[in-house]
Structure formats: C-alpha cells, structure tokens
Image (cartoon, rainbow, N blue to C red; front, side, top):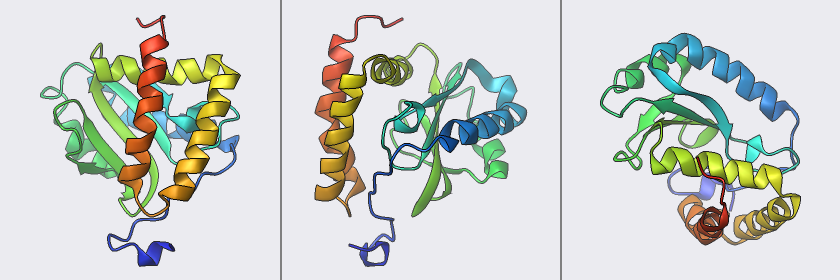
Length: 178
C-alpha cells in the first residue's frame, strides 16, 4: 500500500540494503546532540537499532540511544532537542523519552533518552552487540525483518510487535549483559 493510502499518512515499512552512510549520519547527529543536551548525557550517545549493525538491512532510520540520569532530570531535553527538529511522542513514557525526526509520517531518526542502567538501556545495547558479534544471528534477523515488512507493509506496530519474540529470545541468551 503506498504511503498515501495509509490513513495516518505513515510511509510503508521498507527494508533497505545496508548503507555505509548510516554510521556517518549517526556521527553527525551525535555531535549535534552532544552540543544540544550534552550536560544531561550520563551514559554516552549510542548508535543502536539495525542501522548500527554493519551489513544488516534496515529501515533507513537512525536509532540513537542516550543514557540519562533519570526521566525527570532529563525532561528539559524535550524542549532542547526540538531545535534539532526532533518531535517528542509519549511512546513508552514510563521507560524513556522518545522522539522522531523530522515527522512521524516520514522518519529519518529516532531518539531514545533512557535512564542509564535501566533494563531498556541495557537491552538496546545488548541486542545491538549480539547482532554485531554473530553474523548468522544478524542474517536470521534480516530474513525475519524482510518477511515482516512484506506482511505488514502498512502497519508499523504489527511489524514491531512481530519482531519482539526474536528480540526477547536473543536477549534471553545474551550472557554478557553489563
């Protein structure tokens, strides 16, 4: 279904071959975020998600994880990152401050401000690291993502929901969680 046919105006879920510009785009965004909210960053600014795994096909959205002290303490960041065209959305607001850029219907970046040391923070890094460390695992994930993108092209929530068992399985077996 073309994006125009989606009642919410979202782009369809499309998986692209790995693009070596993704890490470069992350680096530029990390620098901008460091300048904008650096005083709130306590757990570094990490490139996460599929675009952070060399060779892995992905939706072309740069996912960024920022470790913060707490959600309350980092609340001023909501206004500050608006200057970088990030839009706040209260998605899973009990575990993170979530943003997209430049618009929910056409996303180039996702930003997650997550308390450092929380389960969410540790899981995002652990999943990325597991995929980076095991090419076979990454290949299985790529096949799943392509299948789900074909099945749920117009339904981002269903696409994400159906990836969850794979992610949970990886996290359950990933032994080097610090």
